[in-house]
Amino acid sequence: MDSSTDRIEQHILLRAPLERVWHALTDARAFGEWFGMALDGPFVAGQPITGTIQPTQVDAEVAKLQAPHAGTPFTLYIERIEPMRVFAWRWHPYAIEPGMDYEKEPTTLVTFELEAVAEGIMLRLVESGFDQLPAARRDAALRANAGGWTMQMGNIEKYVAAH
Amino acid sequence: MSASAPVFAALGDATRLRLVVALCAGGALSIAQLTAGTSITRQAVTKHLQVLADAGLVQDLRQGRERLWEFTPARLDEARQALDTISAQWSAALTRLQRFVES
Image (cartoon, rainbow over all chains, first blue to last red; front, side, top):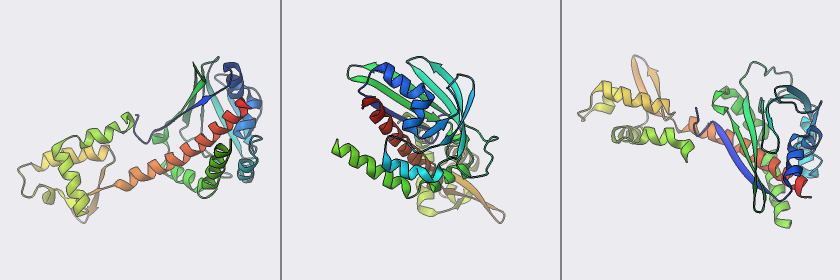
C-alpha cells in the first residue's frame, strides 16, 4: 500500500566524501551525535539495538528542545547495511510516551540511500508504513511536536540564512 | 504526485466526481437523495461510493434506519498533518547531518 499518507520522502545534497557520510550514518556513535541518541552498541544488520534519546551535540538550540525527552528508551531494528549505499532500520516513530508498551504496534521502515553526484553525495531518506499505525499514534506524533517544532524550524532557518 | 494516485483514481470518473461535488455541497446524503433525478441505479451509486470510501474520501454513517454518506476531508487532512510534522523533523535531522559531515 503506497498512499499519499503512507510515506515520507526527502533528499539532501551533502558536500562531503562518501566515506564520511557513510560513517556518520552507520557508526552508532557518530549517528547518535547528530541525531540526538545514545546507542548501546554498533549497528548490525538483522539485529535490534537499544538506546536512549540524548540531546544532539551539533546544535545547542535543538539540544535544548530534545532535553525534556532525554533518557527515553527506544529500539532500532536494523534491517540492511549495504556498504556506501543503503542503511535501513525499523522503529516505532514517536514512541515517547512514558510507560507505554509499543512492542505490539507496527513499525515504520526508515531507509537511507546514498548516491555519488558531481557536487557530492545525494542522500535520499524514505520512511514508510504510516498507514499501518493506529490513528491514535498519529495524534500522539502531532501532540508531541506542537509548539516546540515550530521553534526548531525557525532556528534552522536562521542558521541556513546566516551561513 | 504518484503517491496521491489512489485519490485521483477515485475521482477520475464522472459519476464519482459528481457524487463528491454533491456531498461537498450537501452534507450527509442518502443513496436516494444521491440518485434523485438521475438515471443511475442505487447499486451503481453504492459501488461508486465504496470506491470513494476506499480512497478515504467519503464515509457512511447510520442515522436511524437510514445509511447516509458524507465527504471526509478531515481524515485525509489529519493523516497529512501528522506526516508533515514527522517530515519536518526529518528535515531538521538531515540538516544536522549535513552540518555534521560538512564541518
